Image (cartoon, rainbow, N blue to C red):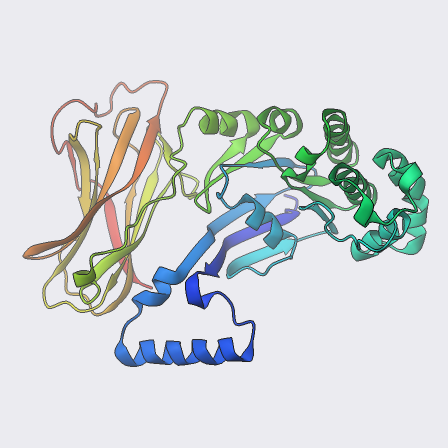
Length: 411
């Protein structure tokens, strides 16, 4: 099997909010170091968690040579951040990326252009940035200019270009300088309809005729459907669905995926010194975080939580309920003593046994004699062509009790 051109494993990108944004100056670095020291001395670790924002979390996928992949999702889903990390504009916080081949990116209008230089000079400048030799650029120069339709303005400084002219020239350079991987963000929307059509045709030629790989982000779903063979749906910085373009677009358009990020609320202040949930994920049979499961297929639940101090046995649990509040499936860890630290509980089942429908996932943490935290974590959709032989969602309370294999590990 051929080695993938793009391989991403466990990718995460974290930003700091409020006062912990970046250590841009020596003063910021000193203040940050003192703050972290104070947290260690006092034993308080919640401030950093409150101030961190994960734009991407646990992103994993492989893309083969010649694939044309659409990346879709709502605003704020993490699409542009993912492309910036893949383009090496920004460094990932966690995870690994392997890119096999030269990458050309078109992420923002005028990226890589110098406003004081002419269009002619910027073609050579941008080509050099992409790793092309002067001979290679010169060989493609006339094609680039003709495609961009800027012949009359070639010797004008690009700071006087319109946004449409910027995009035409930037796309022409990126597409014609023979990258093995072409990454294009929603920036094409700036161009007019005729140029967008022209760009889509060029990307099809690059991928299908020349065997290069294209990543395409757009809210124009007909364009994604026309261009892409496969797609990745992002929501809340996580991969929610992957597969054929038609399948992923159907999930996105018909609301089979909850487009609101998994919700792990901030715990009440009295739990900061006891225990509280930190993360929650449902995974499908491919091991990918998902809001859509298939009846009869394996699935997994991961619940992260932090124990600060406990004098009693600790229990972590979750359950599924219908829209009218009927509980259908529950699973829990056996009560046990836990030392302070971060933990991940894993619940695994060899097949989904609840009939097709939409359910709410409830998460609960408790000590042996009292409840600590309970919240609605997410909505989950179960799909199937035939639900016969499986548990129906209308047959009573607590139908499936603790039918999942459970493990607990300290992280």
